[in-house]
Length: 120
Image 1 (tube, rainbow, N blue to C red):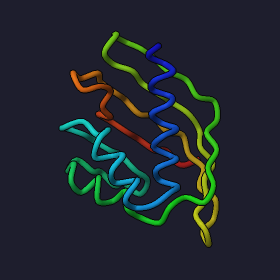
Image 2: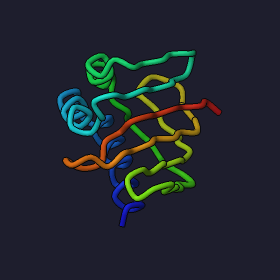
Image 3: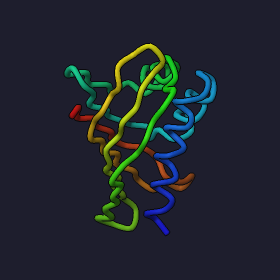
Image 4: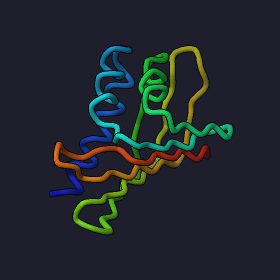
């Protein structure tokens, strides 16, 4: 089922971002679409695929919890996952935000096309 696959991808992304830089960059190298756009807190807009993959090698999350996960399926080949997250990196304050990720199904599987984070 499409919804389960997309939720599993989001969870796998958080797991990768909570492990090693190599795992995080490997995961996003596989999952990002050829064209991708990310809108992040502080007005940060990322649309360079290579720069996005490199940015995933930052400090890992030491804790995260996904809440109120929802999946919209406007077409069989497009899915939008929305949820709230509470996450924390060692030595940093907790981060809480509303997130959305839009995936498109390509011949090689689901690819992340768009991602946005809105701090709460």
